[in-house]
Length: 194
Image (cartoon, rainbow, N blue to C red; front, side, top):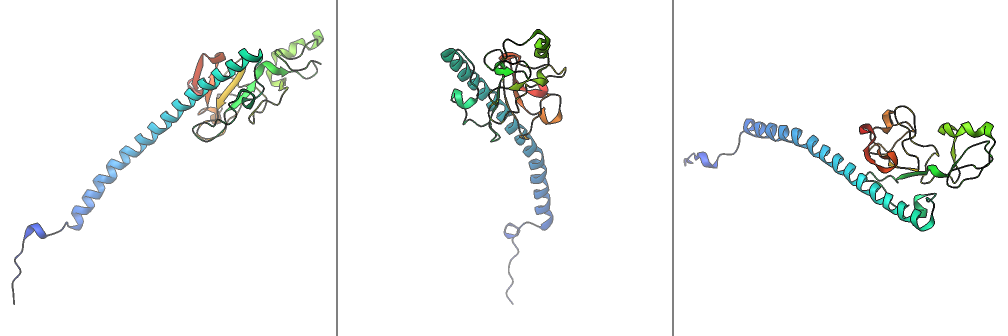
């Protein structure tokens, strides 16, 4: 019987060595993947901020050309834009809000010529509705901060964020991941940071 010489260099890995190597790779992946996903979320938020700033410039150009804010993003030429999560940007022309019972039409500043009895309604944004239907699925009510005051006086522009859901007050859980424009454009960022 021929004897085959035993050479350690030709021997493969043992099961234990393979399991140790897989455990090390799994631990490294467990640390790296959440960091990578966090980086992707931050990059998407940064892209949404940049796109909201771009849409602001488009709206400003429209306002300069027509001396009024657009009634929808489509009117301004930005209606086809979607946020990094695939949802359309939301827009509401607050300057065109009219009040029920005020007797006035839309336009820049809402109802005109209402009686003094109804003038106090201007202080109640919940009672307002968009005269032209808002735009891009907007529900026709201005976004509100923690004290339930509107965050803008000209128009609302925001992304519904990662979850694709949003509600009026920024303090609600569904609104925390929204990327918003607030203080008439002096703030653009996550609603939770406002």
